Image 1: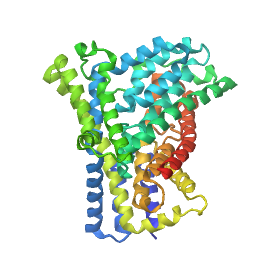
Image 2: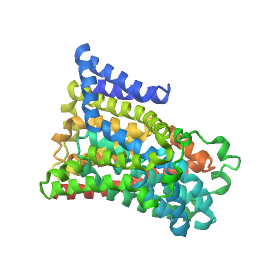
Image 3: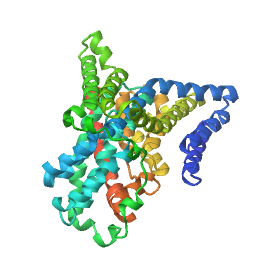
Image 4: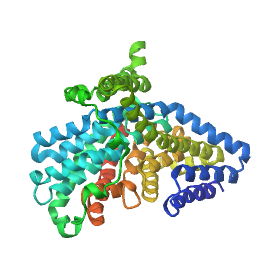
Length: 455
């Protein structure tokens, strides 16, 4: 019966989110309550699992998500990302789609996806003729799409990456070592394949552009557009303004490498801890912005960041609650049986199942992060019994969660409006590119499983 009750809980949450437009936090809590009561946990047991699961995941990733969002807000106030985009546009020419995909997937994940598209879309529209007069804009749109979401799910401190790693109890340093090359490779290969697709007559200017769109009047509002800009800090060299991202990544990677090499150093262990590393990045960003904006200006920037953090933390925490309720409901043994693969290919089948669960949830719910978090909450209770390194299952979830971002996503409409695309044009760019990315990254995850198995 636990299978039936779990299916009802998950499908019920999906229907509430899609059909009745109930917020994911409310929908997932209702799913937790139903599953706990239906599975016989009782009122007290259900509440204990919901609160306990929430608390456990917040202990894992709460500070990381908060620090990451605040770093992104401060970097945006310094004009770091807009300047980086401008430099790319002026220096790489026709290779701009690859540069954009690579940069979005490795440097931009520290800021939220809606801000990324707001920053990158104007540059894509302006630079499109120089890339290719016929298919320059759709190619850049596809590169933007896969760059943003490959970074979001694979590269720390992308919020989906941090949430999935936390739910699966994968050290962020380990996730970064595997996720960064997979995210970058996925972005570049997908950009190349998407260009081949466009070259075969896939794009139709008459139907795929929205000639009546007016970007300034129609585009969705982003809270970060209201934050003050730190003019003095923006005069610093770009590489200096990127230090709040680069320093934490180097520290986390160094700590992970030291762990793999079994090198014991208390200073490196401390600085390589993801919470400390991201806090150091936050301090660097704060010190850069404070002289320009003063206390009030910095407060305004951070307030916008806190606002963004709130719902992300709630959705992530409720994902932990769902996982805890599922684990206590008896579903754990059923999931073990589901993931018990043929002896000759247990790793591959476990990867495919994790990928499929995340892909279906994302396709139904319309949110990459909610799909990934829900999938991780379902699988995390039994990941230790699969005989597969948890980082591999986490990466498979990340890969599947990118699949087919489409019309039930708010990001879809923001993307469409900012790039003056019709609905059909957005399906041909955003939906196709993210679907390609999910398929391209899947064999890369399988390769990562071989590396993790040999380690």
